[in-house]
Image (cartoon, rainbow, N blue to C red; front, side, top):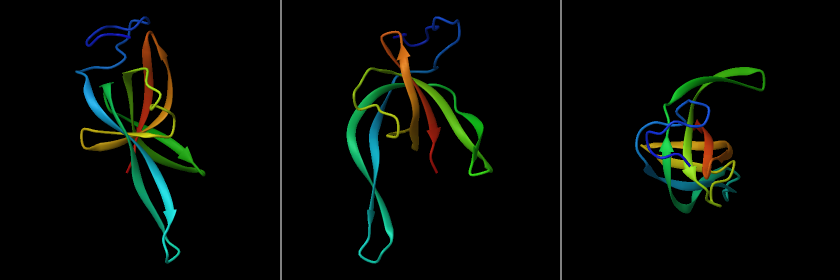
Length: 114
């Protein structure tokens, strides 16, 4: 795993800035007694995260193009980090889109949630 401010094997910075604590959460949907849907967050603890720069990205879903925020981040290997869960940090919620090995740690691809 790279250390703060280090350069990855391909010569590019995998993330910038300092390590921060991010809360690992998972959306839990339920049906209300009146037939509606509610979403609550199940907490799975906190992890150290090395976030990168936030970047806009165009995503096409159901034939509609939408602008979303994307970010790459570095983290230590942790069983709580799985695709589909979310991370809360810096006042926002970021869904884990993909993760893969990066030296001794993980490289995460995150998408900002509304």
